[in-house]
Image 1 (cartoon, rainbow, N blue to C red):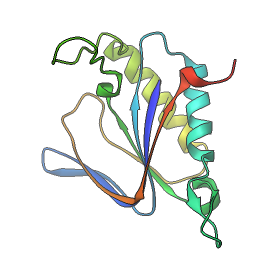
Image 2 (spheres, one colour):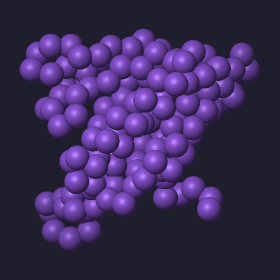
Image 3 (cartoon, rainbow, N blue to C red):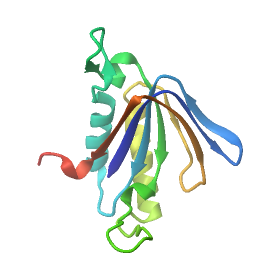
Image 4 (cartoon, rainbow, N blue to C red):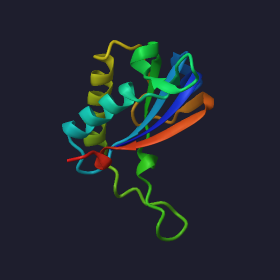
Length: 150
């Protein structure tokens, strides 16, 4: 499971011209579910996401997490994070989980993130979405559950 995290001053997601979610200061989290991912991958990435210290303290150092600053989160499922571009010019997405499995694990990601107490907004699974992001910094970090220490 991968999560591309962007620190933002604001963001929104729209579907067919209708706003589905909007946040202020916080994180946009694009979530890609890989074939073979489990609830342990979800738990690892949720804890990393909400605890990642990428907000500045009074000294300007990255010492604060979304939990510390009460940041808002916009979660958007994005299978394209699993793109394999090794061969040719067209990406392959065979490493992505099947849609039913991906939706189940994405929904679990949302549920666990909500349990953190932070405001959480989402896009809609398997929908064509427009995401407006006001990246702050810019700060963009890729997390991969396969990087966890065993």
